Amino acid sequence: MKVIWQSNADRQRDQIADYIREQFGTKRKRQFIREVHQTTQMLRRSPNIGQIDPLFADRPTAFRSVIVNGLNKLVYRVDDDAIHIVAFWDTRTEPTEQAAKVK
Image 1 (tube, rainbow, N blue to C red):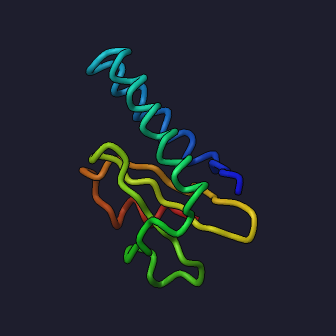
Image 2: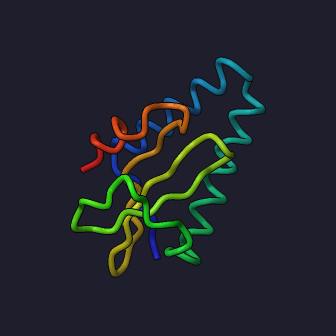
């Protein structure tokens, strides 16, 4: 199963990685990128491992989420042949505001 990052989620991930580099250094950024990669590989093997996210309960499509490195939420949906990563945000931000941005 392939993993497809929507442009918004891709941008969000890159912004978080840049913030980590600025605040904590390049080594910590590389660790973060490794953790994201490991999570996507885990999803590739077991796409339904994430819980159905209650923030998206009103949507016709089931959105699932997993926490990466304890601080970031990766939101995705699964179709027949791909995992679509639709959002990636810091869990310390307002969740309903972040969920409203997901299409």
